[in-house]
Amino acid sequence: MRLVLVGPPGAGKGTQAQFIAAQYDVPQVSTGDIFRANVGQSTPLGLEAKRYMDAGELVPDSVTIAMVEDRLLQDDAAKGFLLDGFPRNVAQAEVLDTLLERAGTSLDVVLELVVDDEEVVRRLSGRRTCSSCGRVWHVDFDPSSVEGQCDHCGGTLFQRDDDKPETIRRRLQVYAEQTAPVVGFYAERGLLERIDATGTVDGVTARILAVLRRFDR
Ligand code: ADP
Ligand code: AMP
Image (cartoon, rainbow, N blue to C red; front, side):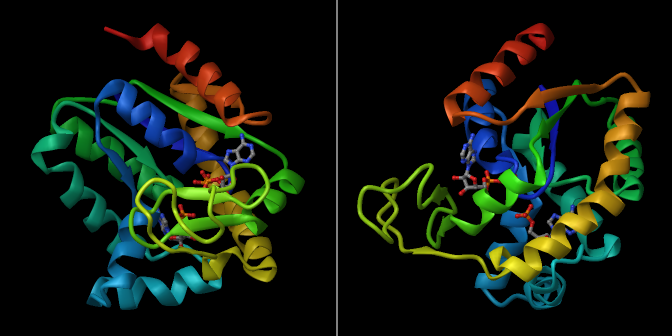
């Protein structure tokens, strides 16, 4: 299974990606997670990316595309993958097409998680992220049992710098201007499936798995 999750920041891509990746036994490739891991380790890539991430802007394509290409060439991605947060503009989508074509494969499906801006703001302002395993929680909608501590691995939870209100507003603008056209790009190619991403996490997962069953081979 080769699939892409697209949707505004806070739509629940990361939350759903972990279930889908486990169900289909494919690696979850989240460009945001890879950038954050590099920021945490202060690598040159991380230092470069951080400036853009903190401002709510996209990291330049030259950096992002090379990183994704490298990741998709790793052995575990040969059987399939789930891309979360990539492509985020049409240029990235075109490069992905070329990379896959070169490898003699193509995407099976692109899932668009649909939620409105108001819900996005509610989700992002309460999001807490584990500094060790990267799992996301929400202070109201999906709280960890001990405040500030990840139930999954015991790591410390933090609020992302880019989940502050002014950066959230900019990220939504960037989504509308640069990422929304990616949805049209895939719709034209007949790859797009729209998923209502409101309601409970389990409810959204069930809707996604019901759609994906049609692509099982
Ligand atoms: P994305 O990866 O699309 O930016 P996340 O998966 O990180 O979004 O989710 C953003 C926030 O919303 C997190 O705090 C997560 O716990 C919460 N969340 C995810 N799905 C739902 C849902 N269906 N209902 C309520 N909150 C949700
Ligand atoms: P995310 O974790 O998906 O919300 O991404 C966090 C931030 O990482 C974004 O706001 C961007 O600055 C950067 N980023 C993640 N994926 C991409 C991408 N495909 N292209 C450019 N920047 C990205």
